[in-house]
Amino acid sequence: MRHTNYSAEMADEPNPLGEYVRARRELVTPEQAGVPVFGVRRVPGLRREEVAMLAGISADYYLRLEQGRDRHPSVQVLESIARVLLLDDDATAHLLRLGADSPRRHRRRPRPRKETVPPGITKLLATLPLPALVEGRYFDVLAANALATALSPRFTAGANRLRSLFLDPAEQALYPYWEGAAGGMVAGFRESVGTDTDDPRFIELVGELSLASPLFSRLWARHDVQACEAPRSTSTIPRSAACSSTASD
Image 1 (cartoon, rainbow, N blue to C red):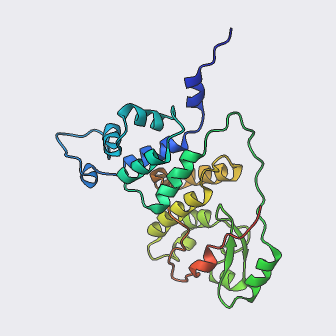
Image 2 (image 1 turned 120 degrees about the vertical axis):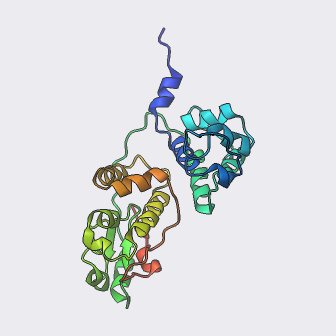
Image 3 (image 1 turned 90 degrees about the vertical axis):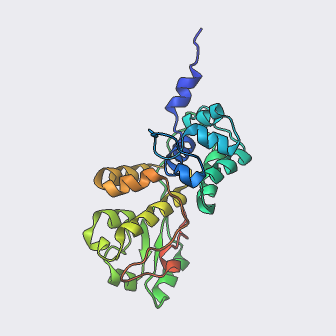
């Protein structure tokens, strides 16, 4: 009789919930959480048992969450963990989405999604008296008007705003504090993607940028999440125009 190693199967599956809480735990200092510090600490941020204590759950249960051995936490548990990890509303909403996205075993990898811009939006772009563009969920530029392209040749259909910001010095020069802008864009990208991390487009883009940009790799490891917000540049596209995501699959 063939025995199934359930623990091994769970270990082989993606564990976005565990990765997220672990990354955020490492960013919270004991002082921020009100935890007394005695002696030398060997780990950055809070210890697992400290998070568990402050959240009112057992240390063993919290360990199972981080390791992916328990994937069905209650909303109350997740909200308690969010409070301990000092998550804001956007980050808490992301945590709850991760907790609600139960693993789907042996699923077939989806084909890349083709995002298109409705004809009405394309016509609207041409009539707007200001620079405007339409982005997809992975920050691909799907359409842009002539005023946007005049600001930057990277504001044109087919470009990717993340790739431009992290890999193109000319794009970085548009932002007085481009590393701060990069942090906001990465956090917005994670919020935009949500739990749909098995999409080939997502895998390709994150892999490319992680290898090519140490800054992107460092920011991505933080697991910051925030709603879409246009970073301030020396030639700013208004937020309402830069964050348009009205494209359809």
